[in-house]
Image: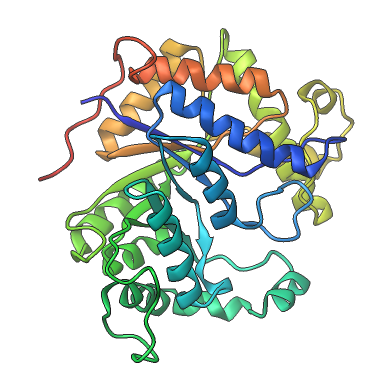
Length: 344
């Protein structure tokens, strides 16, 4: 069995380019991913972030699904503390009704990045603490199960079966297990913690209307190019954006790698920038096949969700094309990256 490969695109903006272009690029990228044979294409939720245009994931998912025909489409994810569970159920019910059998419901527990954004959203940091209860309430809208306001029904969601995925770090694996949801976990850095969390998730998993068995997706940045240095340069724009956000409090649009590499940085900026370049899978096709294949084998993952963003969109697409070839996706040649069969 060849490993399933999927994509999370955050509609990253590029310096000097309109935000609307980033959204159109996401839709075009989804079409390209479908042509390459990727399994899923997900979009994200961020609010008030200059470097990310994707603020309304279910709206963008509808545009992606309308522009494609086979690839599964979903969210990575809808941040449940920011929304009423009834509204989330209704939105996904509409998506599944319009695009039956193609919709994924990826869910996270993050809230806004700043106090101002959280106030504007009508939520606080403490809202993250009831994520397990929110997941249970959301399931109830689909199953006519226990929920507040039992006399209210979520139309057209009730009765639909849409797979749910919980985006979690190692501390949130138990929440995904208790909810009976698939687990999406960063797995390309901090591997030992990730493997321990996956083990806890599988041991504690409780079947639900969403999933009858555990399902593990490891997520992270993967960059493939003709040389290891070229692959590393694909990671440079995002690494600098992360360093800038941690030193200036603003996550900026992406800029060309060559400008970042020539930039004078403070000691702290340099340290954070170098940290941002670590913990990713990158290199030539042979190098990435070996590294990613070994990680999949150690984790027993069912799927890999690739989250790489970069300023150079042509080079980025080439990376995804090479990765598709590595994994033996239907449109990309013979398989060389394999994973163990999922548990029965």
